[in-house]
Amino acid sequence: MSAALEPSWLARLEKEFDQDYMKSLKAFLLEEKQKGHTVYPRGADIFNAFNHTPFDKVKVVILGQDPYHGPGQAHGLSFSVQKGITVPPSLKNMYKELESDVENFKTPAHGQLTEWADQGVLLLNATLTVRAHEPGSHQGKGWEIFTDKVITELSAHKEGLVFLLWGKYAQNKSVLIDPSRHTLFKAAHPSPFSAYNGFFGCKHFSKTNSKLIEQGAAPIDWRISS
Image 1 (spheres, helix red, strand yellow):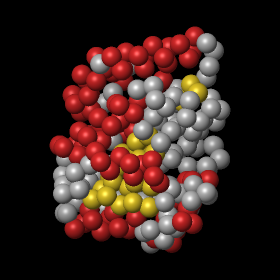
Image 2 (cartoon, one colour):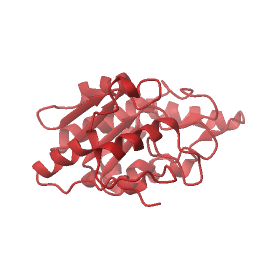
Image 3 (cartoon, one colour):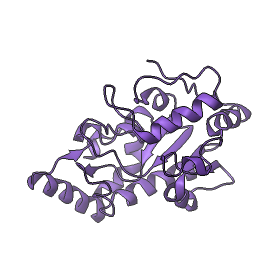
């Protein structure tokens, strides 16, 4: 499993794959398949967030909780779905906020966010796999230990990152981040259940770019090609 990780991340996380929790997680995933369960995303896509956004390229982190659990949706990037798949409600609300916040942003006909990832936006879910049609089914199996380590490594060994923490679950991860080194923007989750409680109007996308420019970094082009 570790061999699939992008080299700059593997250099920092390789020891994690020798830990007992990771061995248990591997055994659990194998058992899921042996029992005939479908697991998303497919194996080759589990570490997609890292492959698109090497450690030294990370500028922004958007934290999600769980991969999408429907057919063809999850491909290893939080909030993103593959082209040809209906745009999920939370991402639709992200597009709405982008239209009001970012000049010249036009909502695309798809939900694939690889263009963000390739610019340095780490689209990280806390749990990297899920059983089909069973949200949260792979929580508490070890992935959170691994992704907490990812956040800790970023906090300790990078400077000037912008963390977008939407909803209580993501905001609980703020204890892993050094606020004297990084910027934390917090808002409600973009889910239809909470978007009107402070996600709409948060202007996190333009605020992120203002912060990056202030720090001498190139801003993110949030526009997405159709």
